[in-house]
Length: 183
Image (cartoon, rainbow, N blue to C red; front, top):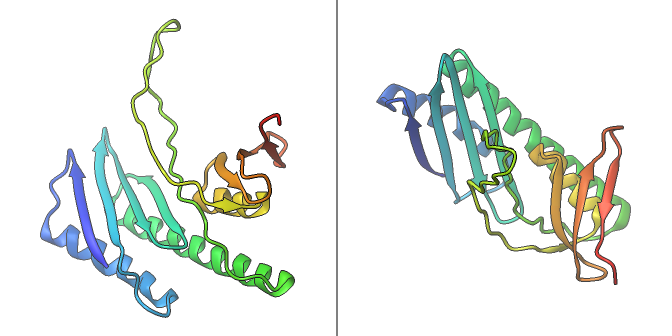
């Protein structure tokens, strides 16, 4: 894996870089062949909170974790734990689905949406970030799995049945909803 480590309001020293690379490289044990993707790590400090974001885009999966903590090294440990849970959850669910339906592994779409806490006036709307991604066909169950794995509240995907763009989302009661366009 190649590491792209960036610091915001923080100088990335050799010790921090070594610690991040050492901890994240432990994730390689979950794969048959080590991922060849870039690992994007953003370290930042706001007030007294240390924040780390790790994104590992791979062919079948997008691993992403974000943690805030007062101690940077503890935040690194926590984000690696979060990524390990995502990998285990992904492997368990894909294997279970493979056994139940006899279907091949499904390719998941990549989606990364962040909640923006930008303060704006009531009559002013400001779009601060735009993301573009390919929508890959999947069923709603697979979209829910991907949404849960990423820790998001919604997930946009292309239905493998209708070919239309759909959205799954987590409802306040803990269940899931599906938004489909009118035909």
